[in-house]
Length: 535
Ligand SMILES: Nc1ncnc2c1ncn2[C@@H]1O[C@H](COP(=O)(O)OP(=O)(O)OP(=O)(O)O)[C@@H](O)[C@H]1O
Ligand SMILES: O=c1[nH]c(=O)c2[nH+]cn([C@@H]3O[C@H](COP(=O)(O)O)[C@@H](O)[C@H]3O)c2[nH]1
Ligand SMILES: NC(=O)CC[C@H](N)C(=O)O
Ligand SMILES: [Mg+2]
Image (cartoon, rainbow, N blue to C red; front, side):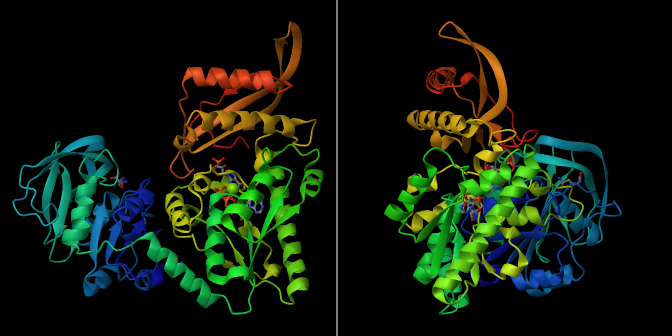
């Protein structure tokens, strides 16, 4: 998906490191307006190429006074004014507008964190429209600096209960600013304010929808892939790669060749279930490669989580490479493209704004990623989902007639059960025990009608022994842990609150049915401080 080819009005977010940048993008997209975010310090050329109707400057952890504070590029103000682009600064974004256009920002006498009440003080505010003077609303603030002098031509249109500037505007120059965060749900009228700003103040059209995204994608893929070119796709049976493959298949038909790898680390009956779904419901051409021995032999005796992940990533690459070579023998020409199901959060996370302090998840653990393919494979990438969030990918999958039950599948990591059996995965029958426990847990969640409420659920094999008493006998057996989380995008997560009756039933089912397990525990940690997977 190419931002420059999106015909709808585009709202560009310049990201200065706010925790809520993704949220602004998502809120705007929910109004059927296309929105993208790029680093706040991006060069002018990137902004010109994207050609936005509106630019939002995000909040951020910096103070505009700090020597290394991130700033929009040179020529930004001249560009937006020459092109009639509306600019909205949120929090740090507002402070940046004030400082750069000749006003003053100082360290606040008071700080405003959390819930705050604001009042519209202007009779005729463009920003708040028909909302009359005196209108009050609860908003969510998070700032320590405050505006002490406005640039010429600006006026204050709302103030906080503590008397600090809460909203400013200069309609003739098309600059607006909010000191609070309209994108968080605690700002009770935040969505109303954003909607009014985009549609009534900026005149943006609400014409972005998934059908258009799909048709545009198919068109672009048809134009990109040559008439005789072949394309490969690593298909995991997960939502992202399946939606990406189905979309590309629609564009180029049987010149798409999918490979599903059984790495010996899959869940109970997963290989059969995934292959059945592909054949029966999705009609995708898939080659299943059984590489379980290859993977497991490489993992023998390896206990370190990062080493395990690296070994698995490397094996995947070898297998994709062999697949490409075999196809070359069969077809006479080597596949030119590789389809990946990369999503927008991956893209945003991989280019955090300078100094934002935002961690890229790869620094915590090496996520298996097909993007690590060796350069000499010379495959060019097709990433049709790279500007979409998971819920949008699910919506796209629905239009592609992918069964809804499939689209609601919980994510499953590429390294599979290897990151859920702690330590050496090849020891004893640990993998097999985990498969049985996981199946009971997931099936119980489905039977209780809870599957769709939970973002991801699974069992973990802890690799420690505990003493138990079973059938009057002393046992010294394995301990497992159950993990279920709610999340928006996997970047942060909270543990799911099961009721105790459900937990009691699952625990008994596991100890009564899985030989070798005498203790079941529940993981009640959010992310952060934990991660979702244990390794
Ligand atoms: N067993 C596998 N066989 C082939 N490719 C795989 C396998 N496991 C993972 N992959 C590749 O790794 C990519 C990343 O996996 P990831 O789990 O992030 O996405 P997904 O499996 O497509 O979707 P989901 O997040 O819903 O599980 C997949 O899109 C796929 O290309
Ligand atoms: O394809 C993947 N390859 C990986 O190596 C990998 N590691 C974690 N995950 C999934 O990513 C989400 C966040 O996981 P963590 O909180 O454990 O980092 C969760 O949904 C995890 O299941 C992976 N997915
Ligand atoms: N949330 C923000 O954007 C904060 C901006 C700035 N760091 C302040 O404290 O005022
Ligand atoms: Mg997966």
